[in-house]
Length: 273
Image (cartoon, rainbow, N blue to C red; front, side, top):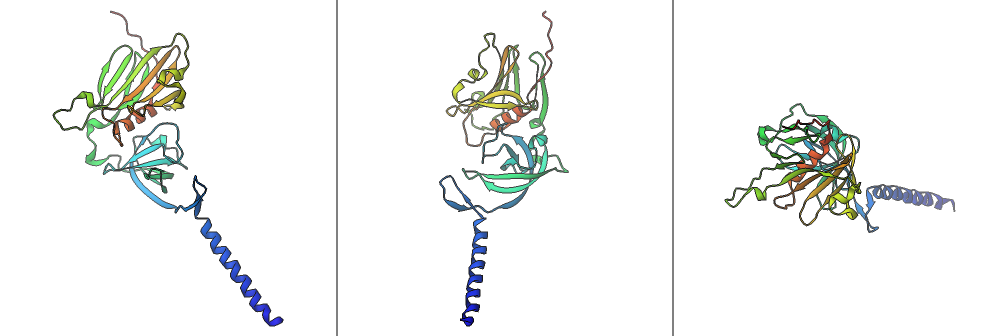
């Protein structure tokens, strides 16, 4: 009987070793939405580029910011250990976990951010494309916009016509994206979300550095993006209308970056002539 004991001990040790390594393999598996397991390798990534915002509300697995590399390729970002809003329009080096969104786009879960020594994008960005501060004093608005946006103003409306890269003879301003900011009277105190065009599917949103409470709506048919925010008895409707709907819309990304800097400023009354 005693001579069988060593074999039993070896057998039990073998089972323990097998269970240990199989358990280690399980730790690399995640359960997807269908309840089945799939491998999810964790890869570290370090990328240099300029950060812009994709809006204030985080969508799980989709990212909240965009990083544009010097070669103009992009990668989505989500902040785990860093406040990405502090680095908008700045050249940075981000480090974190590289994964993919459900649609297959690269997404970095950012753990660390540091400013790059060189704050330029090289020759890929013209001076006229640079971001600059903009203040509309009669409406009391402050935000950042690109220098090459064409501006038109009335007492209740500011519009920016975005440049288009279309080289065809048939191209016109009708195909260029347009950003508008409209002041709408709300004397009857209507609910804020009714000004988005579809109150049922509008979502609450925090707008700009002051975290102004507003609503957001995206029209999937036209590609238009609408934000609304209230000030006293007025509603400000911020809208982006694309000239041509496309999968990657730089105009929409710029609009979100503008929204991330939007805030109210003191109103300066213009004397009547």
